[in-house]
Image (cartoon, rainbow, N blue to C red):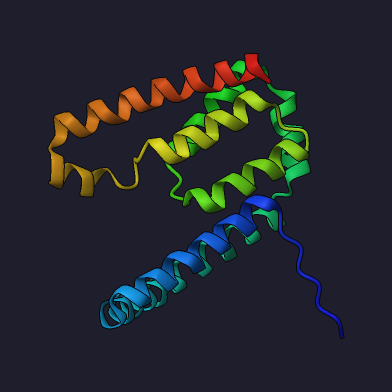
Length: 166
């Protein structure tokens, strides 16, 4: 069986750059580079369960509620209502950006308007209702509430701007 791997120029450049810098690091200090790689692998193993559970949850969600169904629901609403609903849903959802971008791409591909999709994406990555208690402990209630409120407003502005641009 023949395996064919295709990469775009950016991915190829990242791989080449990573290998070059890793080689430089090994040449400079082999012991510290090995320690850094061991730490990175331990951190990766620690995050693996979370990442896989998130991917599984999104796959299950998209199975139960296909993107075409989401697009039909969002398309049946006014753009304003769909945008506010998407923004509110994004504030209470905790999904890492590397999962959120493909998810939003899937939604747009299924026919969801750009404005609600961007509102969902920006609130998803900028507003943290789920992480509010942790952030409050570190930064205080006033700062956390202000940051989340401003992030929500700016997310809507970004969504509107992207709607105009695209």
